[in-house]
Image (cartoon, rainbow, N blue to C red; front, side, top):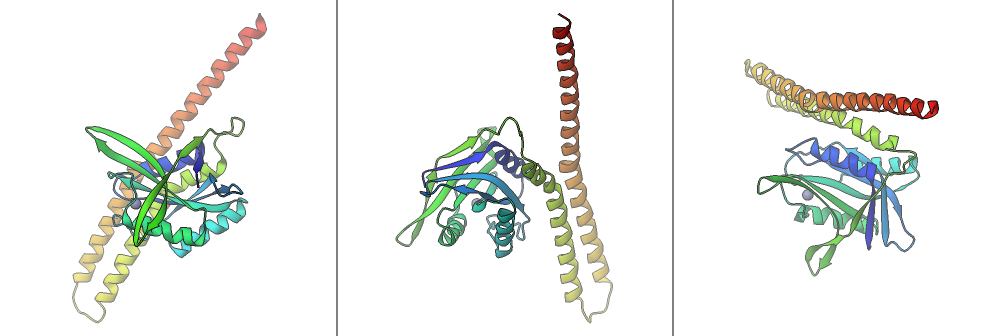
Length: 257
Ligand SMILES: [Zn+2]
């Protein structure tokens, strides 16, 4: 493997997803094509995944996520070529868990690549976004990373941002809301099980607490993600409308000459 190309719209989708949360790592599967000699991978589509475990450095690909990626690849006539995840506030380099996960995937599919986006990482008061592509090589019993040059490919001017990438972008709030819902339901279920056969009102207080936490987290997603998303799309629309009016005016001036 000597190089990786990522289309600009996939990069836009991945970086937006990574920047959507400062606290947790996000995960996406990558689809695209591989050259016949297996030297070049082109990533043309991505599929954002819901996380089952939000603890730090627990990003791993589940069988369920892999099969969702395979059926997505079939629909888009591509193949699964890799995975991407974010490293909020930490270095862009892969952890031991990342190297192991990457090695396991390489065993299943030879030309598989890993992408990492480091976001909100502090460099003397300045935050930088960093982006790498890597593979795992075994040196005896030790796993080491091999970095692969990664290039961002300009989007086709006539088609602009592909609708598949836009679809992933508007799935971001849906994924976050669904994760909160499932975490709340799981907490209530565990509570019900531990209280089985016991007397008292302790369980009602705990349930009220979980309800409060759930409500707070939903509000936070709405406030920090949905509202800014709507605002940025509306202002983009206003800019487009103004530009159309400006261009029409220019055209009429040119035609009257
Ligand atoms: Zn990682």
